[in-house]
Image 1: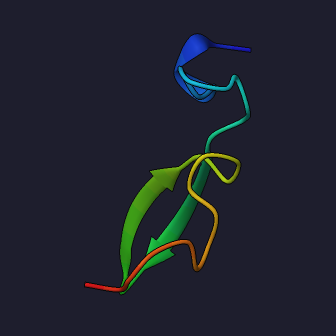
Image 2 (image 1 turned 120 degrees about the vertical axis):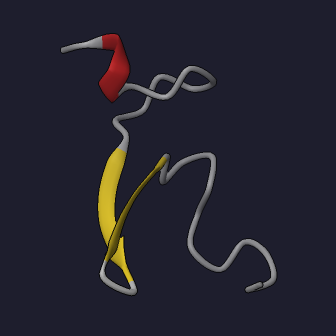
Length: 39
């Protein structure tokens, strides 16, 4: 596995999702869905 596919903070696998037809990557352990306000 490449280091680009792992979170530099916790080592979890980075996930890629589409948000409003644009791709974005996030760590599901460090950035859980619903953990903050939507802006």
